[in-house]
Image (tube, rainbow, N blue to C red; front, side, top):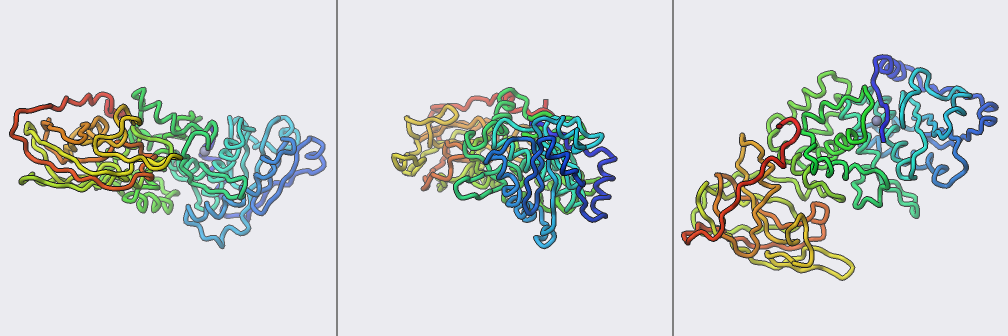
Length: 454
Ligand SMILES: [Zn+2]
């Protein structure tokens, strides 16, 4: 999907006018509209004109839109009392000549590819699946809401990132409930959306974008679908992450500021490097149902190992600091014990020890096997690579550290499946004076370079 959500100067002026003036929707000649085969569907917040035939999926769109409006208000910090009379006029178009004939297309802005929003109006062409049709309506509707309630939508990445964040939804036909800000648990939940796959494919093809590259997305020109995927990914990470969420949401108060991106950089200046590591980890491991809160890394630098050190590790979380410092060239024995639940399906829980289970694999290693990584710490290049190409430690492993750094540990599992894990394991780390059994191999960091680091 692409949508032309441009902020040309004239449109900014129009939006300013809309904000100052009472909400006025165009008068449509009802006789001509009916004769042209355009139906009119109405609800509390939406007037929908469409030339699509009567269809349950189409005809419930106004009711779905009505459920989105209070959720937008909550998510975007708008008082519910301000939205009671907020209305949008939308055109859902199959044959645009019919809309041209009755003057419903936007004059001077009718070259959009899929969707377009302006003030209190939006337009979208018919889409290949009911999910995608709803998604595009909610995407454009988010733009309308931000533009008219917040005054603007911020720079391109924020505007499209928020629209994608708030358009990705779960619609339960049986209960009639809409949930925005949904992170799909499987592709079948969001037919043809493909945002997660686009990011996965880009990382595989070494085309992943750095944070600065996403911040530079300019939606004053036509964007490609992958641009929307990157904007969604940044918004998704920052909106869900326990350390970044509050700062990210505070930016909603500054969508009219020309220095928005500078403010963003300033807000995250103190932990920009850690944010970059987490962004690269997120992109490299992104999965359906990705649990950002469970995979958030609490960066805790290590102290030198005094003797036998013991660490208790949760199996329902991602990387966790051992708070132990390993020294370059020194050899360590790492022994793990415990029994824990690593998965649950129709057959019940899957039990596991630190060696992992041989019937299920994730990223080429046994599910549930203990992994280790040395984070070299601030100022070191390509820190994320060490988390993305970890040691496979298992029950008992001897390793030689390639560089100084803090030992991080986790069990091998998809970031989308940590919620069905349960239990802990105990890991003992000690200097090893015996002949070395296994040396770590240098990491191929070239796989993990992001565009601005090449
Ligand atoms: Zn858009």
